[in-house]
Length: 287
Image (cartoon, rainbow, N blue to C red; front, top):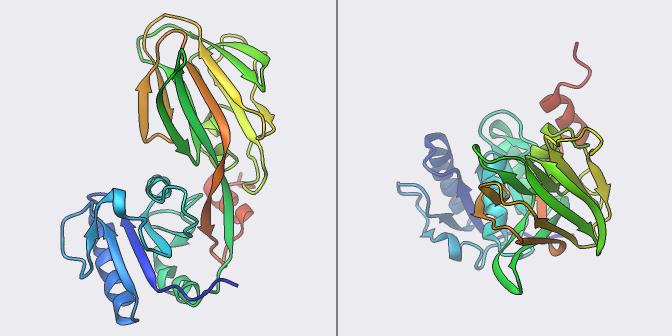
């Protein structure tokens, strides 16, 4: 059973008025209950608690509270540097796939969490390395997806994909998406990828607008490394990680993708289950 939480970090959506005001009220509420509070330094204003740089946010906290949407939660996950710190996602708009708690339920859900009464989802992440010959020129970690895609004016990209050393295929497409189960409801879904239950251990590879309709999304085991090599030289091609960071690719560059040893620990909203989120977000069953 988790223990009582004393040190809380708040991640408000950057330069978002409602997130800033909510963070101020939440900070006061937590301080009144004897908790130590820090706020990521991304917004102006006095939160009544120290603002810390993003690089130091993870130090010493036991819970991260996200105020924003799914993009803000993905950002928060990257701030934790693999530390096993639970994340409570509070959505300031409509219900999110990751930010499960509506603003009106924030304090109702948070009170038992602070007392140690909560359940977490352990979400798989992927480690990414960009290799140029024998040199690593970039790396990162993703909760949602790795995207390799051409620029607006570039011609179709040729991407050779292997799984555990065996040739998967040569994709001729606008790009490919390599997604976790969490990311299966993001960009991969719009590329006709399947919805994967978030606790499953699997990876989805989805081509983006493939030149041939026979190349379809595929679900593969996560314990086998995926390598994608850019074969073409037809213009700009980019590697993007979780939609947050990216870098240009050169012909011959290899992107190596492996299951990470780290997990993102998401605090469940006890009033929801995964299928109710799908029904709400995707309007399942509606005519």
